Length: 307
Ligand code: CP
Ligand code: NVA
Image 1 (cartoon, rainbow, N blue to C red):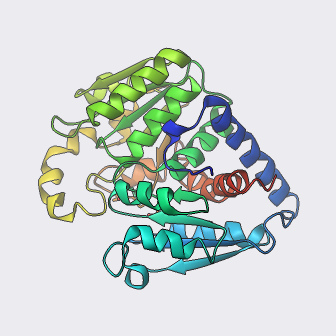
Image 2 (image 1 turned 90 degrees about the vertical axis):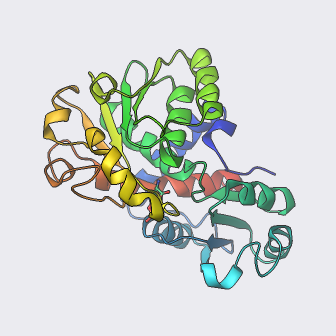
């Protein structure tokens, strides 16, 4: 049974294969529509947190591939509260063909995968956001034509999104730099995995507290919310710490002239990114959002061996 919990679990060939399949499905969709390769299949969607992109893109992905999606709100399942995570996994496996779950604790996803008899997809956890990462590398591939020798810089929090970007970049041989405030670094175990993948792929990686050092000559600059879902009580404190890592026009001068700017969204305009950059000529924010649809079609089709 294959699951999709972290980009760290994929081989380079598997990740590259997912990107190729995403492009194929996107071309097919553009040419008039996808073949109904998921006819009769049902995706269960377990949400512990709010969502726009993940919810809608998974629903539409299933619809466009001939299947069906079932949205289960935080109030319905109450993962681990109304009943145990293991029992939820055992029961839902009897109804649906595949499950996507957005959770607070990544351990809940691991437990779902342990007890489910259908594939489990990580739709965001406190640890990582691999669906986002797949769509992001698809977007980079489309705009930059490849990964080797290019530099991806993340400015901001050592969080779920930057974790997936580190894993993806180092699997694909892309150079990766992160500029983050002291106390908000990527977890040492995450960085150690990135170092291991980089040693295999030839990626160069850098972690620094200096935003200018991180962004220097970047081909891709990426940011995310300073306070993630579940960190609302820290938001005020973070607002005082993170401003040197904001992506504005001035800091972007230090990147390559043809840099692309990325953000997983939702954006907190005026905080981690200015309007001028988010709506400016370097922004690919909405291509990224669209690519969630295409990348997730590929992830589902791959897990269900529908292609
Ligand atoms: N980027 C992302 O996952 O967006 P949502 O939280 O709206 O799903
Ligand atoms: N790091 C953010 C990503 C949102 C898509 C969060 O976890 O809230």
